Every structure is written in structure tokens, then in C-alpha cells.
Amino acid sequence: MDRKKIIYLIIVVSIICLIFSVKVNINTYQDYMQSTGKTRALFGLSELKFSYKYYFGIISLIVFIISANYLRKKENRLLVSIAMLISILAMIISFFRVWRICI
Image (cartoon, rainbow, N blue to C red; front, side):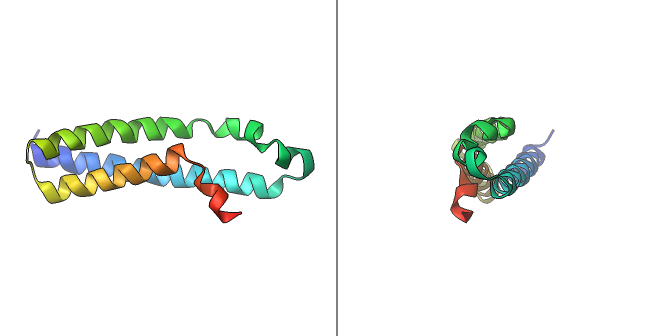
């Protein structure tokens, strides 16, 4: 497989992880807004059902490491930089509670 095709595959995987991470954060926000009283106070426990979002963050971390390796080898710098940027954004959205900004 050509290195350029691998870089495009890395970009696609990063975008997919980003989309799913945003979707999980939207679902978490919707569940929070529908909860009341004690459920809202203890929402951290209810949020555990969305713990699969960390898998997307781990995949994004792996993609970031592969992209950094390509950047170190001085491959197509623009595409690799785009892949790294998207994977960093996907990691941020996966590992942090971005949905709390909307409250």
C-alpha cells in the first residue's frame, strides 16, 4: 500500500473517531438535560454508560502516534499535519467532558 493512501486512511479514521466522539457528547448532554433532581446530582454515575467514548480516544491516540511517525519521516507534511490536528481534536472531545460547556 502506498504511503499516501495510508495517510488518507489515517485522516478517514480520525474523522470517524471525531464524528462518533461528538455524537456521544451530544447524547450525554441530552441525557443530562432530561434528568432531574438526584439523577442530575449524581450524573457522573449515569455517565458511565457512555464510557465507550474512551475507545474512540484510544484509537485517536494511536492514529496520532502513527501520524507523528510519518511527520518525523518527512512524508507529505500537509496531509500528516491535518491528520494530527483532527486526531488531537478527537482525543480532546473523547477524554474531556465537552458537553458540560453547553450547560
